[in-house]
Image (cartoon, rainbow, N blue to C red; front, side, top):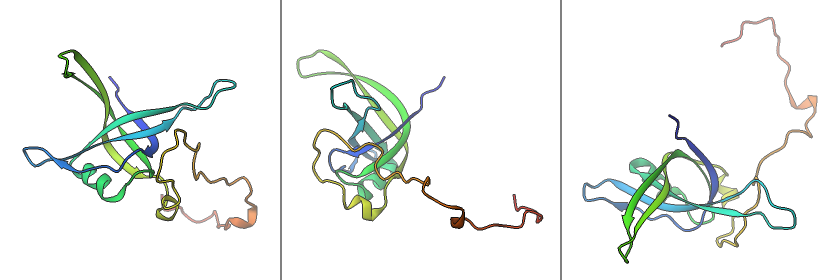
Length: 148
């Protein structure tokens, strides 16, 4: 069976590091992710996805990320049940982060809005090479053995 999630989105709040009774580092945070499509005449919708990171991933996220930063997460979906304050059974869905990475450079993240307006830019900071020319590439002698 397969349970793999890959997300790129913006943190909606600063992550806070906590520790369990066994001194394991953990953080929970929410990532805002735009949907790829929008219905005609409507704005693109944003999903808010709960993430949990443990140990080194939790420490990394809390040390280097803040509200508004673009983040990439690879993990798996986990469900859990609990009782709310009224005694009703509830189910929570969250992504447990196995790998967390930067998506934008430090200087680009400084340009990110510290507030969240409800929608996100689509495909932020994705470069395009369509305007390049042959002069941008170095020619190599193909008669030599390649190192791989």
